[in-house]
Image 1 (spheres, rainbow, N blue to C red):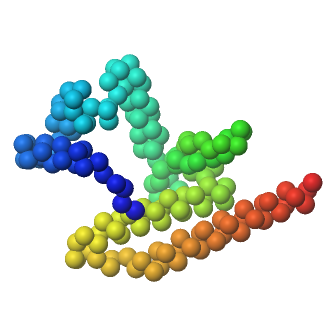
Image 2 (image 1 turned 180 degrees about the vertical axis):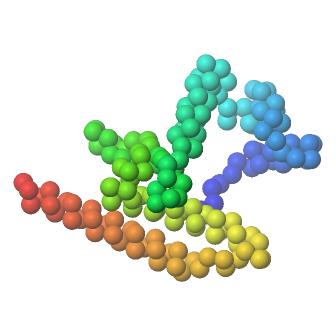
Length: 166
């Protein structure tokens, strides 16, 4: 899926690349400091809020870097998932690999995340002749369809089970 890019943003980033020979985060931030810059509103300028948001990002990075050993293989100890909250909405957070593996909905969600990443990298690989066709798109789409059918079936079964219990 291609997201629509603000042409002024793209133009500004290309200009920075041309000026410096390489586009860097430092150059982007320096240009964004001007309130007249198209880049300005992409940043949090309240230093207290920015520091808090940065620390949250550091906490997320800490969580995903912790590894455990399962069957003699190092794997992440925590995974980012979306779960239903008590008010019926959705919440994002991290669950341990043990909790993930013991919950079929979370396992399915993780598989969906993996398939989406494979699809993304397959699209990226298409840009290079020597990598084109590395992953068979038919198999990828079949896996996604299968996962979606299973999810739809499980939702329908859960709804019917709730009705039966009433």
